[in-house]
Image (cartoon, rainbow, N blue to C red; front, side, top):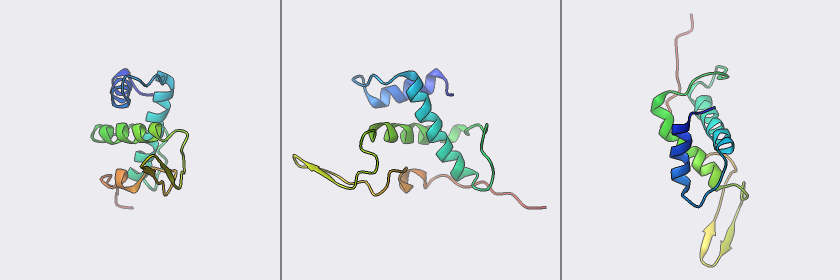
Length: 108
C-alpha cells in the first residue's frame, strides 16, 4: 500500500472530475510498482520489495495510464468523431519501462 502523498499526486494527475477511491488508486499504484520491480529485478522474487525513489514518477505515470484505460483494455481500434484509439496490447507500453535498468549482480 502506498502513502497519501502518492495517492494525492495520482489524484491530481487524473484531474478534479475523477472520483476514484483511494483504495482503487492504491491498487493501481501497487500494480505499477509490480511492473517496475519485475523489470528492475527480472530474476528474483519482488514480493515485499520496496520501490526505489527514483522510479516513483514512472510508477505514477504507469498507474495513471492504466486508470485511464479502464473499460478499454486491449482495444484494437476505436474511431469516433475524429478520435482514433489503437492499443496493441492491454499491458504497459514498452516506452514507459525503457528507462528502468535491470539490477544485476555477480554469481558466486
